[in-house]
Image (tube, rainbow, N blue to C red; front, side, top):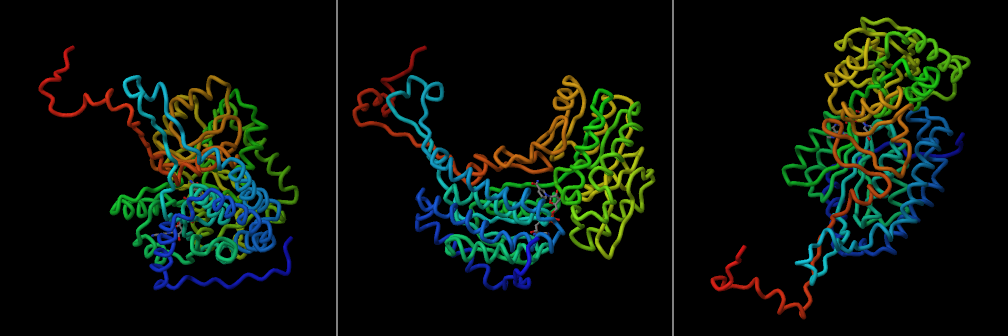
Length: 472
Ligand code: NAD
């Protein structure tokens, strides 16, 4: 555990500084220096070493803000970002290279010309982050922005103040400070930032705030990438391996205390196997928290009192039956991993994204019923999980839409830092990670070049047309 580190007390960026910060990143972009590949590689290397050097501060901040253990902080935030940097450094030149277009994209009639796609940086980007992965979800989009050749201003969540202050110092002391800056604050500061002109806004957060951001960006037709939330279903058929399903979904609801956008919110379980599934869930709980979740050093806490009370209300108001967990302690912002058996989609446990270590188990008599129910709850969740045989899993994929999906596991499609990740419909638009992060901040600009020697072949296009009627 990190000790002896000092983290500056949280301070919001004075609102009057925001226009100058934004215009500085726009001006730096116009110098064209960020377009040089060596410059981008240098910034990525600097970021890698900054995250490495600041690991004690980041670990301490994650512990202070969310009670994340060293292990979880390293696995899901710090090493995640370092690996992201290494991947991008390794592949940047390939991603940034022009793509030559030939057959079948270019038909024979155009073959005297050459076509290519240049990968132009979009410009100055604004990256707005949520509280649950305060380090990863600021730095991972930043890696995409740097790689693409953009400048960027980042706005970390005010609900994770220690992380926000470490990120500010790390970015502003280690990277080119004319190209990259951090603005701290909440709604007022984000609103002020959104009044500025950006070339890309990358927002991660709730669907409700995503709508505010998208609406504001639409006024200037600024492109947005929206990484939002949703109510994610898991399906368990009678052909599932119940023991593995229970263990894996238990992990999916206890990492970061279930404050994960991709966690399952409810599990549709075939009623024939629901009792066994619940028993296996209890076994998994015992395996992971042998002395109980509260005594475990491994369970993160709920980020603040507002969210604690929101989750508590879901549990207090439920008409369902609590079959596992149920303990809460406001003084520690502790909520025990809790499963509730429900029988109505109007139940308080189902009505909103839980974003905590609590979930519903909803018994169903068929996969038809499960799919219809899930489609009526949220047509476009961020994720879905299906535990069945191959045919059943394919049916779920075919008959439901979601941002991403994992078969026979909790959110593994979102655990790999190099494969594209994003939502669909109400859970977001656009994707990032791996090459998708580069593409997210890039304009694919088609360039055609006509050689002078081709003039005699293509002069048919010139007016006057009256002697050139095409005959078919
Ligand atoms: P949030 O929407 O409350 O806040 C996100 C950011 O928006 C913060 O930086 C906040 O300061 C700012 N903000 C809040 N209200 C605003 C307003 N009215 N105007 C302008 N800016 C505003 O989200 P959160 O509570 O920090 O995070 C939880 C949500 O984020 C969940 O819904 C979760 O599913 C989602 N999430 C999605 C992903 C993903 O990759 N799809 C990842 C993490 C979290």
